[in-house]
Image (cartoon, rainbow, N blue to C red; front, side):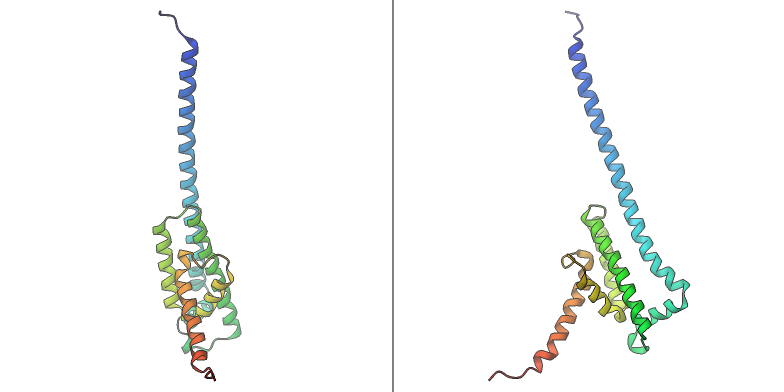
Length: 175
């Protein structure tokens, strides 16, 4: 009865090694996800920082932001329009990256809500960029239900209402 059953010992050792391997793989996946999440957040912070660095480092860009913030008080040149379009495209790319990171599980709902708040503050602070942000929004695929684009979607809807309102009120009556 004291005979050692090597087959049973080998089976138990095999099960233990499988469980240990699964635990190791699970730990590695969690670490890889943590690194990917951190990397995504750092890249997004760098994209925002690039805009601020340009504004701080280049007087022409600083002047452009004054025009973006109060377009009715400044002459906006063709060069300014081009820069505004480029800025809106850059921001659209950043916002798209935020949504992609969320869709891939790298950002949670709180992160996206914080970024959507940043977008809403930008929309409120930069009326001179509204048309360009809306144009970029309309050119991007699959963003109409993206949480981070909600403030721009609302702006686009408002601009659409404003554009259709005056025409509707000046329409000829039906006979």
